[in-house]
Image (cartoon, rainbow, N blue to C red; front, side):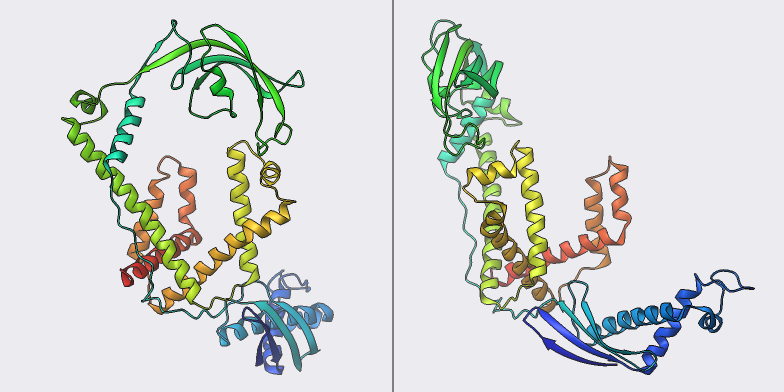
Length: 428
């Protein structure tokens, strides 16, 4: 077999492959074995016919087609191994010449995993930020805890004010007609939290218990519902209850209420540790992203379009699912954010994100090879067990870990994590 490799681009190649009589003869024997399973010959059971007998009874056209198919498949596989190429899709094969038993010539065109030229990954400039926690941040956390432990009491002698929790009935109308989602009974609302459109919560302030009043408002122009965005509406509101929060004092008794703390100083120390740990995790993730982005910029990373398209489909699927959880649709998102159509959104938001993910993945894979980073069977087993513990109460979900594919995915993810940690160590 002879092969000639030609790069059409950094990510696409075409192989011209010539198969001789010897290889075609071997392919014919493979084809005869396959055809013997369906060839009926008197005196032989199905699937038990010798190849030499099958050759005399099989349809010549069927044998020729099967031989061609087997010869191409074997030649393509051997050629890519010989040229040390990793195809990313099924090659597009074009037969140029085929003389049964004598010669086969064809081309195979496909996108391949590109050659990545790493920049100097041992001298990156990104640095992790140092973290600190201020007294103000601790006080703000304590204030949120006070709100969480507050007791509420009904107020009957004054009007509603910011910070109160109110229970209301309301009906929203557009051009005098109630609109979907604009009506509720005994709805609890914290004034000042900004849950409703501008003017709604502010409009309740100053009104008294059992009072019914109208609020003439306008929905924001970028509201997620196109039917309501920018429109004028009237809400008729009845104030059923006003609840005032009684916040606990910040003292040792409060500390004991908040957790296993003897005094307020212990509580503050614990809050400081938690906030410090949270900030360190956040800055750590930012540092990883910064290192990887810098390495991508310093490296030559050709990007196969097939990988970008695959990543785009994944991003779109996850994004639409997240919108669904929020009660939104992709159409409402496109409208709110001024996209002409879904294609415009894909090109402006989805494609750039997909491109960065693919580049990062290719760079990390090359770094893994360069630094000879791997994982032992014991390490992979340990990580498989960690994943399995998340599904201890779901026997059906546990079955997925019995497959080699899942184990391989977990192993690859672990190796990627090790590579990132190694990159951090080299630049710390």
